[in-house]
Every structure is written in C-alpha cells, then in structure tokens.
Amino acid sequence: MAKILIIEDNVTILRLLETLLKLEGYQVLVAIDKNIIFQTLSQELPDLVLLDVHLWADGGTEISGYEILEHIRRTPELRDIRIIMTSGIDLRVQALKAGADDFVLKPYIFDELMDSIQSYISR
Image (cartoon, rainbow, N blue to C red; front, side, top):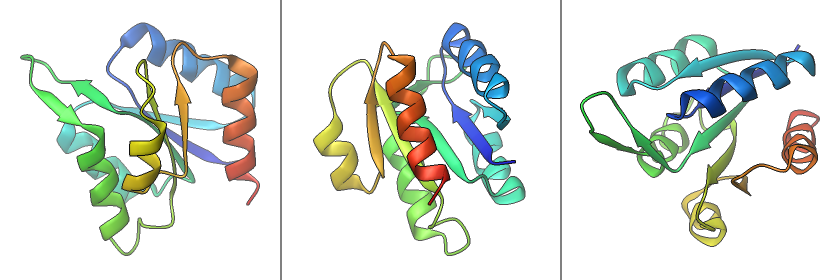
C-alpha cells in the first residue's frame, strides 16, 4: 500500500483529502507543524508528498512549501520522494523549477488530482 503524506494547513481540505485518499486505498499521513513535517518525512519515508505552497502554523507563522521541498531534495534518503505541490494560485512553473514533480491547482478537481497521484505512485 502506497504511503502519502499530506502537508496542508486548511483543516477542511486536509480531512477531505485524507478521507478520499484512504477510500482509494492509500495509507495517509498528515502533518502541519514544521518540526513534525521533517520528523514524519524521515521516519515514515512516504512514497508521495502532497505539499501546499503556503502553509500557516499556529500563531500565524508562514512555512514555505518551497523550503520543505528544498529540504526533501537535498536530503539523500528523501530526495526520491515524489512531490505534488498545490496552491490556489497557479504556481506551476515556479513549483516545477523548484523541484516538484507536479503541481495541482486548488480547488481540486478530484479526477485530476487522482490521475496525478496515481501516475507518480505507479512509477
């Protein structure tokens, strides 16, 4: 069973994605806090990360999805994890240049999101 880590600060979107991906048969992990994100990545080694570009932690501190992406790509045991970045703003070009495998625009079209996830999980 493929393991997907969702890094998303919107709790409604997070819970919806978690439910839908579990129904599709994936093992789903979730993380919002920066320290938990890095810990989960190292301990769980997910097959794919669904990563929001702009994250807000408790207290209103912004966490950059690009910073998380850079950490993954420069860490030898993590660098092969597939990453799909997401945002409500079309940042496809920037996300791909930064090292993401794909970009999906919010609000999600579920079939488009699943096609992207399945194409990277099956590789």
